[in-house]
Length: 269
Image 1 (cartoon, rainbow, N blue to C red):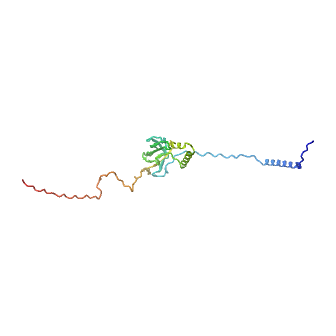
Image 2: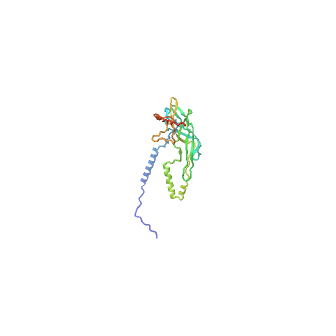
Image 3: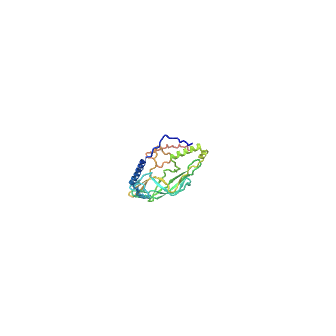
C-alpha cells in the first residue's frame, strides 16, 4: 500500500519576483551612489616639532651679583670627591669642592670648584638587630680667593639612613604581618642587619657659614658673631683669683699707732 503523507493545512505563498527584482535594483543603485560620493582618504601629516635646545648645567652664584652681604648661616653646597660611609675610619679626611661660586658686588669671593676638606670624627657600621650605621663629620674652613678663610658649620653632624614617614610605616606593617603569618619571621626580624650610610663621589652635601661676609669698595670683611652672652647664669670659677689691682672706691683703714711700753728701771747692784 502506498504511504499516506500527512496533509498540511498551511499553503505556501508564491514568491513575488517583482518585489525581489525591485529590492535588488534599489540595493545596486544605493551602492553605486555611495561609491560615487566617497573620496579616497588622505593622510594628515603633522610637522615634527624641533627638539628643545640643550641647556648645559652652569654654576649658580650664591647671592645676587649686586649683593654686598652674605648673612650668617647661609647655605653653601659642596660636591664630594671621595666616598664617606659608616665604614670610614675616624680621622679620615675626605675631599669636596664648592658647587656654586660666591659672588658679592660683582666680585668673586670664592670661585666654583674651591676645595674644602671634610673630617670624619666618628663612624659606626650597621649591626645585627636592625641597628643602622652612622657617620659624623665636620667641615674645615673654606679658603677664599684672597687667601682668607671662612668658617663652616655642618647642619647635621651625625648622618644616618633617613626614611620617610611612609617608608617607616610600610616597614612596620610589613614586619607585623610577617611576624603573624610567616613562621620564623620574628627571629629573622630580630637578627636582621641594619642599613649602612654611603655617600659616594658626586653627592651634594650642605654646610652653613659661621661668619658674615661683606664687601665695600672691593674690600672683603669677615665678621664672626659675638660670643654667647649669659643672662641668668653667673660664671663661678673653682678657685678665687687674686686681685691684680685695687678696686675703685676702696679706702684702706688707717692703722692705729701701737702703744709704747717704757721699760721699768732696774736696781743697781
